[in-house]
Length: 201
Length: 243
Image 1: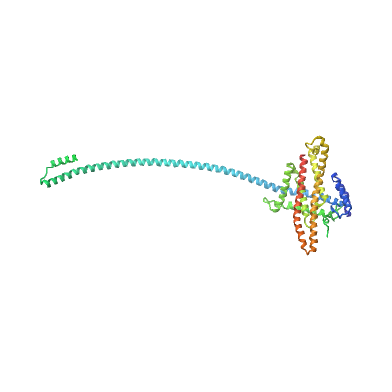
Image 2 (image 1 turned 90 degrees about the vertical axis):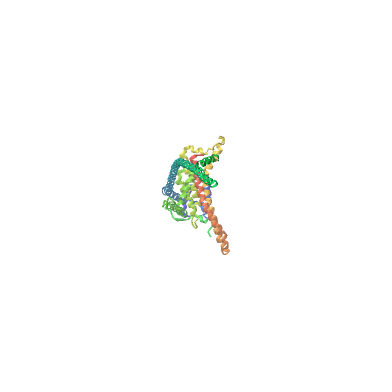
Protein backbone atom coordinates (compact mmCIF):
# COMPACT_ATOMS: atom_id res chain seq x y z
CA UNK A 1 0.00 0.00 0.00
CA UNK A 2 1.34 3.41 -0.94
CA UNK A 3 2.45 5.35 2.15
CA UNK A 4 0.97 8.63 0.93
CA UNK A 5 -2.49 7.09 1.10
CA UNK A 6 -2.15 6.33 4.84
CA UNK A 7 -4.11 9.39 5.92
CA UNK A 8 -6.52 8.58 3.13
CA UNK A 9 -7.72 5.51 4.97
CA UNK A 10 -8.80 7.54 7.98
CA UNK A 11 -10.32 10.20 5.74
CA UNK A 12 -12.20 7.66 3.67
CA UNK A 13 -13.39 5.88 6.78
CA UNK A 14 -14.79 9.17 8.06
CA UNK A 15 -16.43 9.90 4.72
CA UNK A 16 -17.96 6.48 4.31
CA UNK A 17 -19.20 6.38 7.86
CA UNK A 18 -21.44 9.39 7.23
CA UNK A 19 -24.26 7.27 5.95
CA UNK A 20 -25.57 4.23 7.78
CA UNK A 21 -26.62 2.76 4.44
CA UNK A 22 -23.01 2.60 3.37
CA UNK A 23 -21.88 0.52 6.32
CA UNK A 24 -21.98 -2.88 4.56
CA UNK A 25 -19.98 -1.50 1.66
CA UNK A 26 -17.32 -0.07 3.95
CA UNK A 27 -16.93 -3.47 5.57
CA UNK A 28 -16.72 -5.18 2.24
CA UNK A 29 -14.16 -2.69 1.01
CA UNK A 30 -12.09 -3.02 4.14
CA UNK A 31 -12.04 -6.80 3.89
CA UNK A 32 -10.96 -6.77 0.26
CA UNK A 33 -8.51 -3.99 0.91
CA UNK A 34 -6.47 -6.24 3.17
CA UNK A 35 -5.88 -8.64 0.32
CA UNK A 36 -3.73 -6.01 -1.41
CA UNK A 37 -4.49 -3.65 -4.29
CA UNK A 38 -4.21 -6.31 -6.95
CA UNK A 39 -7.82 -7.56 -6.75
CA UNK A 40 -10.04 -4.56 -7.36
CA UNK A 41 -8.43 -1.14 -7.16
CA UNK A 42 -11.91 0.26 -6.50
CA UNK A 43 -11.91 -1.42 -3.08
CA UNK A 44 -8.55 -0.06 -2.02
CA UNK A 45 -9.70 2.18 0.80
CA UNK A 46 -6.34 3.95 0.93
CA UNK A 47 -7.16 5.78 -2.31
CA UNK A 48 -10.58 7.03 -1.17
CA UNK A 49 -9.29 10.17 0.52
CA UNK A 50 -7.55 11.58 -2.51
CA UNK A 51 -10.39 10.62 -4.83
CA UNK A 52 -13.07 12.28 -2.71
CA UNK A 53 -10.86 15.31 -2.14
CA UNK A 54 -10.14 15.89 -5.81
CA UNK A 55 -13.72 15.08 -6.75
CA UNK A 56 -14.92 17.78 -4.37
CA UNK A 57 -12.35 20.28 -5.67
CA UNK A 58 -12.92 19.64 -9.40
CA UNK A 59 -16.70 19.41 -9.05
CA UNK A 60 -16.81 22.66 -7.10
CA UNK A 61 -14.60 24.39 -9.66
CA UNK A 62 -16.72 23.08 -12.52
CA UNK A 63 -19.91 24.08 -10.72
CA UNK A 64 -18.69 27.64 -10.26
CA UNK A 65 -17.47 27.83 -13.87
CA UNK A 66 -20.79 26.53 -15.19
CA UNK A 67 -22.91 28.60 -12.83
CA UNK A 68 -21.09 31.90 -13.28
CA UNK A 69 -19.65 31.67 -16.79
CA UNK A 70 -20.97 28.99 -19.11
CA UNK A 71 -24.69 28.78 -18.29
CA UNK A 72 -25.33 32.56 -18.41
CA UNK A 73 -23.61 32.69 -21.80
CA UNK A 74 -25.63 29.88 -23.29
CA UNK A 75 -28.76 31.20 -21.60
CA UNK A 76 -28.24 34.69 -23.03
CA UNK A 77 -27.89 33.40 -26.57
CA UNK A 78 -30.83 31.01 -26.26
CA UNK A 79 -32.98 33.73 -24.74
CA UNK A 80 -31.95 36.29 -27.34
CA UNK A 81 -32.87 33.84 -30.07
CA UNK A 82 -36.21 33.06 -28.45
CA UNK A 83 -36.92 36.76 -28.16
CA UNK A 84 -35.97 37.35 -31.79
CA UNK A 85 -38.12 34.47 -32.96
CA UNK A 86 -41.02 35.68 -30.86
CA UNK A 87 -40.60 39.25 -32.15
CA UNK A 88 -40.38 38.00 -35.73
CA UNK A 89 -43.48 35.89 -35.27
CA UNK A 90 -45.36 38.81 -33.78
CA UNK A 91 -44.28 41.01 -36.68
CA UNK A 92 -45.32 38.36 -39.17
CA UNK A 93 -48.70 38.10 -37.48
CA UNK A 94 -49.10 41.86 -37.57
CA UNK A 95 -48.09 41.98 -41.22
CA UNK A 96 -50.48 39.21 -42.15
CA UNK A 97 -53.29 41.07 -40.36
CA UNK A 98 -52.34 44.16 -42.32
CA UNK A 99 -52.38 42.16 -45.52
CA UNK A 100 -55.82 40.82 -44.71
CA UNK A 101 -57.02 44.35 -44.02
CA UNK A 102 -55.53 45.63 -47.26
CA UNK A 103 -57.03 42.74 -49.13
CA UNK A 104 -60.41 43.58 -47.68
CA UNK A 105 -60.18 47.23 -48.66
CA UNK A 106 -58.95 46.32 -52.12
CA UNK A 107 -61.85 43.98 -52.53
CA UNK A 108 -64.26 46.67 -51.34
CA UNK A 109 -62.79 49.21 -53.75
CA UNK A 110 -62.92 46.65 -56.50
CA UNK A 111 -66.57 45.83 -55.91
CA UNK A 112 -67.40 49.52 -55.70
CA UNK A 113 -65.61 50.13 -58.98
CA UNK A 114 -67.37 47.19 -60.50
CA UNK A 115 -70.83 48.43 -59.49
CA UNK A 116 -69.91 51.91 -60.66
CA UNK A 117 -68.80 50.55 -63.99
CA UNK A 118 -72.00 48.61 -64.26
CA UNK A 119 -73.97 51.75 -63.49
CA UNK A 120 -72.09 53.67 -66.19
CA UNK A 121 -72.61 50.84 -68.60
CA UNK A 122 -76.29 50.72 -67.82
CA UNK A 123 -76.63 54.49 -68.26
CA UNK A 124 -74.76 54.33 -71.55
CA UNK A 125 -76.96 51.51 -72.70
CA UNK A 126 -80.08 53.43 -71.73
CA UNK A 127 -78.85 56.53 -73.50
CA UNK A 128 -77.94 54.51 -76.51
CA UNK A 129 -81.31 52.84 -76.55
CA UNK A 130 -83.07 56.19 -76.19
CA UNK A 131 -80.99 57.69 -78.98
CA UNK A 132 -81.68 54.72 -81.10
CA UNK A 133 -85.40 54.96 -80.50
CA UNK A 134 -85.36 58.66 -81.30
CA UNK A 135 -83.44 58.08 -84.50
CA UNK A 136 -85.73 55.23 -85.40
CA UNK A 137 -88.76 57.45 -84.87
CA UNK A 138 -87.20 60.17 -86.97
CA UNK A 139 -86.32 57.69 -89.67
CA UNK A 140 -89.79 56.22 -89.54
CA UNK A 141 -91.31 59.66 -89.93
CA UNK A 142 -89.00 60.49 -92.80
CA UNK A 143 -89.75 57.20 -94.42
CA UNK A 144 -93.48 57.69 -93.99
CA UNK A 145 -93.19 61.17 -95.46
CA UNK A 146 -91.16 59.88 -98.37
CA UNK A 147 -93.65 57.07 -98.81
CA UNK A 148 -96.64 59.38 -98.92
CA UNK A 149 -94.73 61.69 -101.22
CA UNK A 150 -93.91 58.78 -103.49
CA UNK A 151 -97.48 57.58 -103.32
CA UNK A 152 -98.70 61.04 -104.29
CA UNK A 153 -96.18 61.13 -107.10
CA UNK A 154 -97.28 57.71 -108.28
CA UNK A 155 -100.95 58.74 -108.12
CA UNK A 156 -100.17 61.91 -110.14
CA UNK A 157 -98.20 59.87 -112.64
CA UNK A 158 -101.06 57.42 -112.94
CA UNK A 159 -103.59 60.21 -113.40
CA UNK A 160 -101.31 61.76 -115.97
CA UNK A 161 -100.82 58.40 -117.60
CA UNK A 162 -104.56 57.78 -117.56
CA UNK A 163 -105.16 61.20 -119.07
CA UNK A 164 -102.63 60.55 -121.77
CA UNK A 165 -104.31 57.16 -122.38
CA UNK A 166 -107.47 59.09 -123.27
CA UNK A 167 -105.55 61.31 -125.67
CA UNK A 168 -103.83 58.29 -127.22
CA UNK A 169 -107.22 56.54 -127.50
CA UNK A 170 -108.68 59.66 -129.07
CA UNK A 171 -105.86 59.79 -131.60
CA UNK A 172 -106.06 56.03 -132.26
CA UNK A 173 -109.83 56.27 -132.64
CA UNK A 174 -109.56 59.32 -134.94
CA UNK A 175 -106.90 57.57 -137.03
CA UNK A 176 -108.73 54.23 -137.20
CA UNK A 177 -112.07 55.93 -138.04
CA UNK A 178 -110.33 57.85 -140.77
CA UNK A 179 -108.68 54.68 -142.10
CA UNK A 180 -111.88 52.63 -141.95
CA UNK A 181 -114.35 55.16 -143.15
CA UNK A 182 -112.12 57.54 -144.96
CA UNK A 183 -113.80 60.43 -143.30
CA UNK A 184 -112.76 62.40 -140.33
CA UNK A 185 -114.88 61.81 -137.31
CA UNK A 186 -116.14 64.65 -135.35
CA UNK A 187 -113.97 65.22 -132.27
CA UNK A 188 -116.97 65.69 -129.99
CA UNK A 189 -118.45 62.32 -131.04
CA UNK A 190 -115.12 60.66 -130.62
CA UNK A 191 -114.55 61.95 -127.10
CA UNK A 192 -118.06 61.00 -126.13
CA UNK A 193 -117.50 57.50 -127.49
CA UNK A 194 -114.23 57.16 -125.64
CA UNK A 195 -115.69 58.38 -122.39
CA UNK A 196 -118.45 55.83 -122.83
CA UNK A 197 -115.96 53.08 -123.61
CA UNK A 198 -113.72 53.97 -120.68
CA UNK A 199 -116.70 54.12 -118.41
CA UNK A 200 -117.79 50.71 -119.61
CA UNK A 201 -114.36 49.30 -119.15
CA UNK B 1 0.28 -8.26 -20.24
CA UNK B 2 -1.63 -6.09 -17.77
CA UNK B 3 -4.72 -7.62 -16.20
CA UNK B 4 -8.15 -6.23 -17.05
CA UNK B 5 -8.46 -4.57 -13.65
CA UNK B 6 -5.11 -2.82 -13.75
CA UNK B 7 -6.60 0.09 -15.70
CA UNK B 8 -8.48 1.07 -12.55
CA UNK B 9 -5.28 1.41 -10.52
CA UNK B 10 -4.94 4.77 -8.80
CA UNK B 11 -1.38 6.03 -9.16
CA UNK B 12 -0.15 9.27 -7.64
CA UNK B 13 1.44 11.79 -9.97
CA UNK B 14 2.29 14.59 -7.54
CA UNK B 15 2.27 14.34 -3.76
CA UNK B 16 -0.24 16.58 -2.07
CA UNK B 17 0.69 19.16 0.55
CA UNK B 18 -1.03 16.91 3.08
CA UNK B 19 -0.89 13.13 3.19
CA UNK B 20 -3.80 11.37 1.51
CA UNK B 21 -4.63 13.99 -1.09
CA UNK B 22 -1.95 13.21 -3.66
CA UNK B 23 -2.73 14.36 -7.19
CA UNK B 24 -3.39 11.04 -8.92
CA UNK B 25 -4.30 9.87 -12.42
CA UNK B 26 -7.94 10.04 -11.25
CA UNK B 27 -7.51 13.64 -10.16
CA UNK B 28 -5.75 14.41 -13.45
CA UNK B 29 -8.72 13.19 -15.48
CA UNK B 30 -11.17 15.01 -13.24
CA UNK B 31 -9.17 18.17 -13.96
CA UNK B 32 -9.07 17.39 -17.68
CA UNK B 33 -12.85 16.90 -17.57
CA UNK B 34 -13.30 20.33 -15.98
CA UNK B 35 -11.06 21.91 -18.63
CA UNK B 36 -12.72 20.12 -21.55
CA UNK B 37 -16.24 20.91 -20.31
CA UNK B 38 -15.30 24.54 -19.80
CA UNK B 39 -13.79 24.76 -23.27
CA UNK B 40 -16.80 22.98 -24.73
CA UNK B 41 -19.39 25.23 -23.14
CA UNK B 42 -17.57 28.55 -22.91
CA UNK B 43 -15.55 28.57 -26.13
CA UNK B 44 -18.43 27.03 -28.06
CA UNK B 45 -20.54 30.03 -27.17
CA UNK B 46 -17.80 32.59 -27.83
CA UNK B 47 -19.33 33.77 -31.10
CA UNK B 48 -22.85 33.98 -29.64
CA UNK B 49 -24.35 33.48 -33.08
CA UNK B 50 -28.05 33.81 -33.73
CA UNK B 51 -27.78 30.87 -36.11
CA UNK B 52 -25.44 28.50 -34.27
CA UNK B 53 -22.61 26.53 -35.84
CA UNK B 54 -21.95 22.88 -34.98
CA UNK B 55 -20.05 23.53 -31.80
CA UNK B 56 -22.46 26.15 -30.48
CA UNK B 57 -25.35 23.82 -31.36
CA UNK B 58 -23.86 21.10 -29.19
CA UNK B 59 -23.47 23.38 -26.16
CA UNK B 60 -26.99 24.65 -26.68
CA UNK B 61 -28.29 21.11 -27.12
CA UNK B 62 -26.88 20.09 -23.72
CA UNK B 63 -28.34 23.24 -22.18
CA UNK B 64 -31.78 22.64 -23.70
CA UNK B 65 -31.59 18.95 -22.82
CA UNK B 66 -31.04 19.63 -19.12
CA UNK B 67 -33.57 22.47 -19.25
CA UNK B 68 -36.32 20.23 -20.57
CA UNK B 69 -35.31 17.42 -18.19
CA UNK B 70 -35.82 19.72 -15.22
CA UNK B 71 -39.04 21.18 -16.64
CA UNK B 72 -40.52 17.74 -17.19
CA UNK B 73 -39.36 16.05 -13.99
CA UNK B 74 -39.29 18.83 -11.44
CA UNK B 75 -41.34 21.66 -12.89
CA UNK B 76 -40.78 25.40 -12.61
CA UNK B 77 -39.48 25.11 -9.06
CA UNK B 78 -36.54 23.11 -10.37
CA UNK B 79 -35.28 26.06 -12.38
CA UNK B 80 -33.03 27.33 -9.61
CA UNK B 81 -31.25 23.97 -9.44
CA UNK B 82 -30.34 24.17 -13.12
CA UNK B 83 -26.61 24.96 -12.61
CA UNK B 84 -26.17 22.03 -10.23
CA UNK B 85 -28.02 19.50 -12.39
CA UNK B 86 -26.20 20.79 -15.47
CA UNK B 87 -22.80 20.45 -13.76
CA UNK B 88 -23.67 16.97 -12.54
CA UNK B 89 -24.63 15.87 -16.05
CA UNK B 90 -21.65 17.31 -17.91
CA UNK B 91 -19.20 16.18 -15.24
CA UNK B 92 -20.38 12.55 -15.39
CA UNK B 93 -20.90 12.60 -19.17
CA UNK B 94 -17.47 13.97 -20.00
CA UNK B 95 -15.86 11.83 -17.30
CA UNK B 96 -17.39 8.76 -18.93
CA UNK B 97 -16.57 9.83 -22.49
CA UNK B 98 -13.01 10.96 -21.81
CA UNK B 99 -12.48 7.68 -19.98
CA UNK B 100 -13.05 5.90 -23.28
CA UNK B 101 -9.94 7.47 -24.79
CA UNK B 102 -7.17 4.88 -24.97
CA UNK B 103 -4.73 5.31 -22.10
CA UNK B 104 -7.02 7.59 -20.14
CA UNK B 105 -8.54 6.97 -16.74
CA UNK B 106 -12.27 6.72 -15.98
CA UNK B 107 -12.83 8.26 -12.57
CA UNK B 108 -16.52 7.26 -12.68
CA UNK B 109 -15.46 3.61 -12.62
CA UNK B 110 -14.57 4.02 -8.93
CA UNK B 111 -17.28 3.32 -6.41
CA UNK B 112 -16.00 5.94 -4.00
CA UNK B 113 -16.38 8.67 -6.63
CA UNK B 114 -19.88 7.67 -7.66
CA UNK B 115 -20.85 7.10 -4.05
CA UNK B 116 -19.54 10.52 -3.04
CA UNK B 117 -21.57 12.10 -5.86
CA UNK B 118 -24.65 10.07 -4.95
CA UNK B 119 -24.37 10.88 -1.23
CA UNK B 120 -23.91 14.53 -2.10
CA UNK B 121 -27.06 14.43 -4.24
CA UNK B 122 -28.91 12.52 -1.52
CA UNK B 123 -27.96 14.95 1.24
CA UNK B 124 -28.60 17.97 -0.96
CA UNK B 125 -32.05 16.74 -2.00
CA UNK B 126 -32.96 15.86 1.59
CA UNK B 127 -31.85 19.27 2.82
CA UNK B 128 -33.87 20.95 0.06
CA UNK B 129 -36.91 18.96 1.18
CA UNK B 130 -36.43 19.86 4.85
CA UNK B 131 -35.76 23.50 3.99
CA UNK B 132 -39.00 23.68 2.01
CA UNK B 133 -41.35 21.63 4.19
CA UNK B 134 -39.69 21.66 7.62
CA UNK B 135 -40.66 18.69 9.77
CA UNK B 136 -43.56 18.03 7.44
CA UNK B 137 -40.95 16.61 5.07
CA UNK B 138 -40.93 13.40 7.12
CA UNK B 139 -44.55 12.76 6.14
CA UNK B 140 -42.89 11.59 2.93
CA UNK B 141 -42.20 8.31 4.70
CA UNK B 142 -45.85 7.81 5.64
CA UNK B 143 -47.48 5.85 2.82
CA UNK B 144 -50.68 7.23 1.35
CA UNK B 145 -53.86 5.21 1.69
CA UNK B 146 -52.32 2.48 3.85
CA UNK B 147 -54.28 1.53 6.97
CA UNK B 148 -52.82 2.88 10.20
CA UNK B 149 -52.03 -0.55 11.65
CA UNK B 150 -49.67 -1.15 8.72
CA UNK B 151 -47.61 1.99 9.53
CA UNK B 152 -45.11 0.16 11.78
CA UNK B 153 -44.28 -2.01 8.79
CA UNK B 154 -44.60 0.49 5.96
CA UNK B 155 -42.68 3.41 7.47
CA UNK B 156 -39.44 1.42 8.02
CA UNK B 157 -39.75 0.08 4.45
CA UNK B 158 -40.17 3.60 3.08
CA UNK B 159 -37.19 4.81 5.09
CA UNK B 160 -35.01 1.93 3.91
CA UNK B 161 -36.02 2.52 0.29
CA UNK B 162 -35.22 6.21 0.71
CA UNK B 163 -31.83 5.47 2.22
CA UNK B 164 -30.99 2.97 -0.51
CA UNK B 165 -31.30 5.66 -3.16
CA UNK B 166 -27.69 6.85 -3.01
CA UNK B 167 -26.47 3.26 -3.05
CA UNK B 168 -28.38 2.32 -6.18
CA UNK B 169 -27.39 5.61 -7.81
CA UNK B 170 -23.71 5.02 -7.04
CA UNK B 171 -23.55 1.32 -7.85
CA UNK B 172 -25.41 1.70 -11.15
CA UNK B 173 -22.91 4.20 -12.54
CA UNK B 174 -19.82 2.55 -11.07
CA UNK B 175 -20.81 -0.98 -12.15
CA UNK B 176 -21.68 0.09 -15.69
CA UNK B 177 -18.43 1.94 -16.19
CA UNK B 178 -16.28 -0.71 -14.61
CA UNK B 179 -17.94 -3.60 -16.45
CA UNK B 180 -17.67 -1.84 -19.81
CA UNK B 181 -14.02 -1.00 -19.39
CA UNK B 182 -13.15 -4.45 -18.08
CA UNK B 183 -14.86 -6.03 -21.07
CA UNK B 184 -12.99 -3.75 -23.48
CA UNK B 185 -9.73 -4.72 -21.81
CA UNK B 186 -10.54 -8.44 -21.98
CA UNK B 187 -11.31 -8.22 -25.69
CA UNK B 188 -8.20 -6.13 -26.23
CA UNK B 189 -6.10 -8.86 -24.66
CA UNK B 190 -7.81 -11.37 -26.99
CA UNK B 191 -6.66 -9.30 -29.97
CA UNK B 192 -3.03 -9.77 -28.93
CA UNK B 193 -3.41 -13.26 -27.48
CA UNK B 194 -5.20 -14.79 -30.46
CA UNK B 195 -3.34 -12.63 -32.96
CA UNK B 196 0.05 -13.77 -31.73
CA UNK B 197 -0.65 -17.49 -32.22
CA UNK B 198 -2.43 -17.16 -35.61
CA UNK B 199 -0.17 -14.66 -37.37
CA UNK B 200 -2.65 -11.84 -36.79
CA UNK B 201 -5.71 -13.51 -38.34
CA UNK B 202 -7.23 -14.51 -35.00
CA UNK B 203 -7.17 -10.91 -33.89
CA UNK B 204 -9.75 -9.82 -36.47
CA UNK B 205 -12.82 -11.11 -34.65
CA UNK B 206 -12.02 -9.67 -31.22
CA UNK B 207 -11.00 -6.33 -32.76
CA UNK B 208 -14.34 -6.21 -34.59
CA UNK B 209 -16.04 -6.90 -31.30
CA UNK B 210 -14.01 -4.12 -29.73
CA UNK B 211 -15.17 -1.63 -32.33
CA UNK B 212 -18.78 -2.59 -31.66
CA UNK B 213 -18.23 -2.53 -27.90
CA UNK B 214 -16.62 0.89 -28.06
CA UNK B 215 -19.69 2.22 -29.83
CA UNK B 216 -21.84 0.56 -27.21
CA UNK B 217 -19.72 2.07 -24.43
CA UNK B 218 -20.21 5.53 -25.88
CA UNK B 219 -23.94 4.90 -25.64
CA UNK B 220 -23.55 3.66 -22.07
CA UNK B 221 -21.50 6.75 -21.21
CA UNK B 222 -24.40 8.94 -22.34
CA UNK B 223 -27.05 6.74 -20.85
CA UNK B 224 -25.50 6.50 -17.40
CA UNK B 225 -24.92 10.24 -17.22
CA UNK B 226 -28.56 10.70 -18.24
CA UNK B 227 -29.86 8.15 -15.73
CA UNK B 228 -27.88 9.66 -12.87
CA UNK B 229 -29.14 13.14 -13.70
CA UNK B 230 -32.74 12.15 -14.32
CA UNK B 231 -32.89 10.26 -11.03
CA UNK B 232 -31.47 13.32 -9.29
CA UNK B 233 -34.31 15.31 -10.86
CA UNK B 234 -36.90 12.78 -9.71
CA UNK B 235 -35.53 12.79 -6.15
CA UNK B 236 -35.58 16.56 -6.23
CA UNK B 237 -39.16 16.47 -7.39
CA UNK B 238 -40.07 14.15 -4.50
CA UNK B 239 -38.38 16.47 -2.04
CA UNK B 240 -40.13 19.56 -3.44
CA UNK B 241 -43.59 18.10 -3.90
CA UNK B 242 -43.70 15.17 -1.39
CA UNK B 243 -45.60 12.48 -3.30
